[in-house]
Image 1 (cartoon, rainbow, N blue to C red):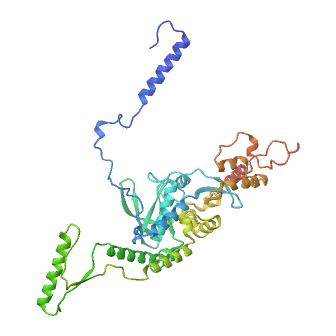
Image 2 (tube, one colour; image 1 turned 90 degrees about the vertical axis):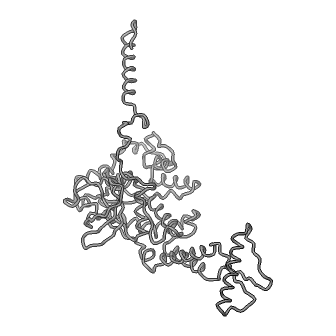
Image 3 (cartoon, rainbow, N blue to C red; image 1 turned 45 degrees about the vertical axis):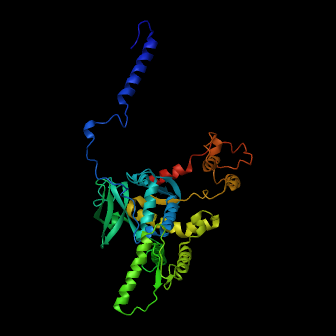
Amino acid sequence: MVEEGTTGTEKEVMTKMEASIGSRLKHAWNAFLNRDPTNFYRDIGIGYSYRPDRPRLTRGNERSIVTSVYNRIALDAAAINVQHVRLDENNRFLSAIESGLNGCLTLEANVDQTGRAFLQDAVMSMLDEGSVAIVPVDTTFNPEVTNSYDINSMRTGKILDWHPNHVRIRVYNEKTGIKEDIELPKRMVAIVENPLYAVINEPNSTMQRLVRKLNLLDVVDEQSSSGKLDLIIQLPYVIKTEARRQQAENRRKDIENQLAGSKYGIAYTDGTERITQLNRSVENNLMKQIEYLTSMLYSQLGITQSILDGTADDKTMLNYYNRTIEPILSAIVDEMKRKFLTKTARSQLQSISFFRDPFKLVPVNEISEIADKFTRNEIMTSNEIRQIIGIKPSVDPKADELRNKNLNQSKNDQTDPPNNVAEEKIEKAIKK
């Protein structure tokens, strides 16, 4: 309320303050206070105690060390950026395209997953099942009618049945909260097969043999730790008649009752009886076979123990990325490029590419030398180097110039910088 005796300027200020406070109070919202009491018992769908859209591993993989290998590969593959991009006439990267597909790959694939979580889900499902279906759920137009559509959300699905031109897929429906089986044409679903299928998913492959051996080892461990005493009681008489057998059985039950009823598990026997304990593990070569299959699997996948525990050097990691991660990402990217980009889009130099940051594995003591070589040879600008280190870019316009700062710039070169060549190439590509 405005008091009397105030000037016009003060009245305007106080009026604006009252309007601002009133607007804030009017539009303020609290998650606990601003609730409609009639909506307490509204139907918001089916509920679970665990996340229903998470991938569930099959064939006993969740009970073995195979899960850690799958998870390591999926994490490293998801750490690489996958984007919907535009290329130049030499198939070089120009810029990222602001589209729904690019938003699914980089920001939000669906209401439950980010782009990175979606890619990790796709790789995990592909390694476990041998193949995975990337299903466009929400699109701008009907994919069964036209090929010119943009994808707003996508999910991974398990392929149940294969038909000549269709596949039956089990996909999580976020509207109902359950997984449903749907039939879709192959031309609108990205079907990615595991490039390491012969090593991982074949029935008699190295991975499957390792899983069976690990399951056998679990059975042996459960038997050895089941709490049984494994005793043999030698009685002082020959057991050949039925009466003697019944007497021996009664003696065995008597010792069992003594051990079960005793506080410390103590029993007594006759001086003529002899007890032999057999709860020692029988010698077998099961562990040697598991060690052999594990080393064989690591060599076939291009993985070492140092990669799993994080002590691998740069050459080992480079070999791992080239032999294991690159084939998996190439299979995913090529299939999405084939199914989600039309011929017209590809003729306009659109593509789906992945980019790995080569500086993630570089130690801090080598960054300075690399920065000097890259800026001196006009490969990267100073601001690009600062971004890699984690420092905010400089406002100096010279920090965005590709030039050797160790050399003095002549007066003839001190002219206005030319137009951005990349922008000109983008405009030419769009016009084409």
